Length: 205
Image 1 (tube, rainbow, N blue to C red):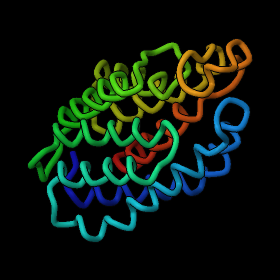
Image 2 (image 1 turned 180 degrees about the horizontal axis):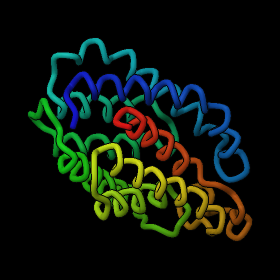
Image 3 (image 1 turned 90 degrees about the vertical axis):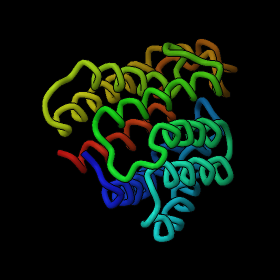
């Protein structure tokens, strides 16, 4: 499915889409968070992009671990530790690999989901990034066909999950302070995950 050049290209694309959507993600965060999700994610992924040239000869695990550690150290708020954990857990699965299959990718996302659940002490239905991550993972596990087709199914499920967060009452993170006033708001973390997944899906479309 993917070689190191693909991985580097995807990470560059992730930085690009986060920079493009920085203001949108921050606007989503204004009513329910600290108004900084887009700003923080943009800073973190730019720091990742700056390190990519030095990672071109590394294995997938080393690259993803570096991404995770960079996000933890540069992204503020809750999203830094959560996204950092996701990438570092995925890195364990990818350790030593210079090629990744779809089975590898699903195992990596599985590990990332478990890492986010543990770090955030959260599960689905609480208006968090997990409400996009888990449906995407389940849809891809159930899908068949080419990598592009499986990823497209995952992206559609992630985007539906993002939409579903509008009907949830947040019980985790800063948004939980709002109680029922969090209803009707789209979760920024779920949105940024769907954006990142869209880069992977587009790469293999």
